[in-house]
Image (cartoon, rainbow, N blue to C red; front, side, top):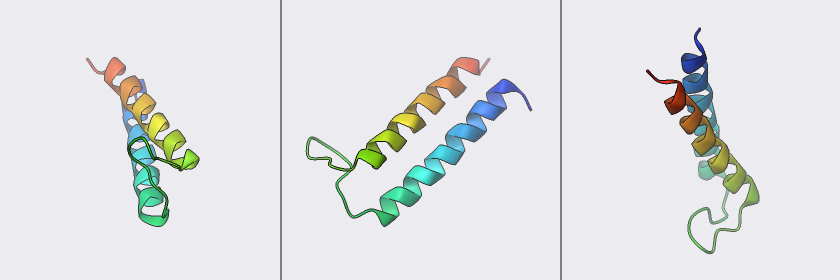
Length: 58
């Protein structure tokens, strides 16, 4: 498994976790009134993982 595929797998895993959180959490996750800190951290982690996967792409 290459570094790129590992980063892509990590991004996909975090995306799945984030989507499951959105389905289960009743709080707001988008916009200026967002009040879910866990959702914010998960979203940031997904974005960072996607950026890392994109940097490793040829």
